[in-house]
Image (cartoon, rainbow, N blue to C red; front, side):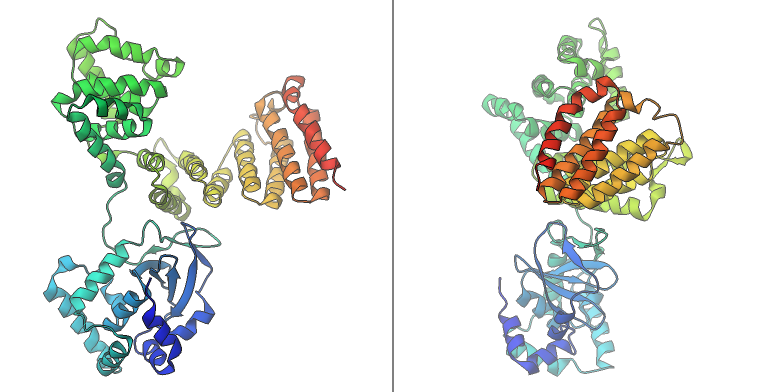
Amino acid sequence: MTDHALRLLRGDGRLASLAAFPFGFDLARAAHGHVEPVRLASGGPLEVVAGDDTGGTYFLCADGSVLYADSEGSAGVIGSTVDEALEMVVGLPGWSDYRNLSPDDGEAAILARVAETEDELRDCYGIDEERAELRAALGFADRSPVELVGLLHSALLRTEPDFLLLNEEELCAYERLDRHARPPLWEPVLATGRADLALLRSGDHTIRDALADDAIRRRVALRAAQFDRAEGDLDLLRHLLKHEAASSMTDELRLAAVLVGLHGHPEDLPLLHEVRDTDFDTGCGLSDVPGTDADAEELRGWARGLDEALFGTDPADEPASTWTELALDQGMTELARVELIRALDEIVMDQSKLRSPRGQQRLDTSPLHWLAVEFERLGDLPQALRAQRLYAALQESAWDRVSARLTQARLERTSGRPGDAARTLTLLRDILAGPGDETLRNWQGVNLGRFVAEEHCALARTLAEAGQGAQARTVLTVAEAVIGELSEAAAKGVRELAGETARQVRGLS
């Protein structure tokens, strides 16, 4: 990280004044912070180092990058160091007009745009002598606008995934500061799979066996084969299919079966049946595999039908869940996080995206459930809770409302919000007391009742561990009351837990 120029500004009032005006890098505004509390989705530190007269803020990130956030909800990296960002700000007064320029626009177009903007600035105040003085004092070279626009373009493209800015209260993401195209998530996710597919095609059996034994590499390689189909792949597809059965019923197992079946070799039917019979789940998931006496056309027809319905050859047609799950499997946590946050923001801003195609008045809330599960999987409990709260608020039947609130309370408890969890459990009990429909008529005799009691016990223990004895005893009393309403079979599994909780809570002074 280089911050030589920043140190010079901080130590010289004249230079600091020049940077503030006319170049819009005002150190004095750092004391005021940003217009709202913000944080990085990746969790890294942010330091406000300057601001401008439009309400924009310059943040210094842990690796030295400078992130600029405007007052309208957009943000982007503008330099890999403070010196680089300052060099760009000083060399390109009015730089925000060039956010959507790239080297591909060509030198003539870039110079014309810069000249137009700077002529407008000169009509209001001087920039040329001021720029020359500041450049000389800070040790900046006289770089061309084309080079500086290239630096800005490269910096902006680095914003995601590591520097996605969030509103700290609502946890929604800032929009991109630019409109430059980014590669879709499937490209980096498939990169290793494509490399592994090439290795498999090389015919090295040692590589083939090692790769097939690695569940994650195997799955990604199968996805690569989905979009790069070759006649000579049948033998390696058979090998991957046999090994994928060890993971039971996965989407990739069905994909491998389809890719084998598309070759239309009836001699593969015994293998398909062997894979189908691996366990109960594979038996259900591959129950429609043609019989062992099927001919080539019947086998191809079966595979072609599933391929058209579930797979295909364009990665852009795959559901987002395919790529976020494979990204998480490969450790691409921040790439997956960005994709998930953007998806949740879209739903929060426009719930009509949940409108069911089968009934225009009914919402399909399953995407929210999936988002909550995926956020919890990557350890982002605040975002999981944001998705779960909206999911719970949109449930219609009493059973679904209770189930959703139960998960919400668990997330609140595990994310360090026991007070919120207690309030959510109160809402849950209100639904049990007055459900408004028949879906909860037997809740006392099924697992749902036991789960409700268990969550009350878990919250009581959390409160006790936090030294909140009075609140813990209150929740424990409610837990015992809930257990008293359960059937004997449902209560049997939770009484021991309640007893242990009672000893812990009542052992507090």
